[in-house]
Length: 458
Ligand SMILES: *Cc1c(COP(=O)(O)O)cnc(C)c1O
Image 1: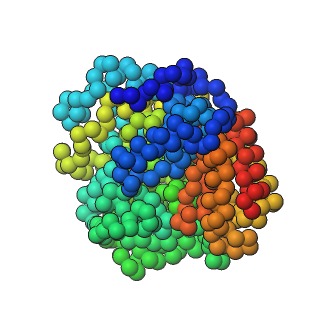
Image 2: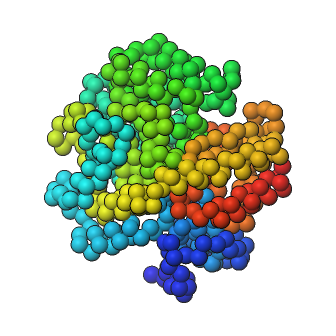
Image 3: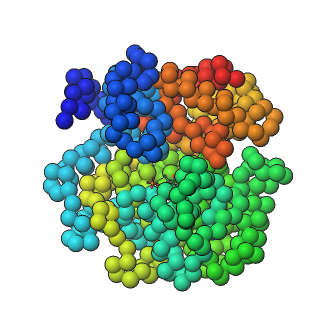
């Protein structure tokens, strides 16, 4: 394998030892990345897209360093995964120690302590002090699928209520749960049945005004459930507390708590999909805590294990224990190396008080973005919580997506060494998900570059 020849010529290690600086030394992507991109295009399915084709050699703190030695400010965290920073020391140490001891036995064949320890942590950290149990899986989609399986089994009902703008994954069941056709569902049907989509409270686009989005949204969702499904047919209401891929839509106040109450009074399992919002991202350990909502089941993945593939379903013990023995599982679910990484990541969140860091990131970003909004009328809405912040771009004074401007802004940010991601049903949302280890000076610099990008694109 000659893949590592470039990486080994430079002495840079990943993790927090990387110089925390923005450094652009070639065009982006540079010549070495361009070579690798050509190999990717020849070898990797075209169905796998790339936001920014710089090939990574190291990452840590708030930066990603590419094979051409450019150092980019990372406002994506691998899509809200490396909340604790890339190659975080406690994650790396856990992985190294566990990998040297054993890499896999299959927990369903011969178990090991790490899996149990992760379950204990999740039972403790998730909202509510009722008795909880956990099952581990490999990906967010797999966790959501299993949450639905458990809810159906426990209730003996089949209908699942999901929301407009929802994203729950790309497997067959989760495609059906996801709202957006292109690129997630288009041409991939037929989809699973008994999935019912109801309106989401979307304050910025609420016809009678943002202040009514919570109460009217709740009314509409419940009315649809009652009239089109029947409450006693519903196994689960499944919702992201903040819609992630849908554009960081924070539902109006009372929407989530009202749905949770409605579910509980009708024997419906309330499932919070916290795959993107979990693990300190929103300035709480879990986003549900903000409104004091206690879900029956919570699904987690992304930020759980500092970059290792792991996912979990955590919920009321009576629900989690309803399924027959052997009804849940999978070959790799709760892999010992991934579990060691998760324990390292959870320790880092506590040790470095990353919940507070996420809040601080929001406190830095929101006023800067609000000030920009006063100068750039293309910024229609600024929303989110903690270190999960987005801006929705519209043609000034309208709700029409400003798609050309967003493309120009993203392009300029990338060429100046700031990695930003987009989102949204209309593709017009810039979303910011910095690692919670982002140095404040770098965050500040990234916002200055963003400001410049707005100035030249609008
Ligand atoms: C990313 C995501 C998923 C899917 O997770 P994968 O690990 O990509 O399968 C599910 N739900 C939400 C809210 C997500 O953000």
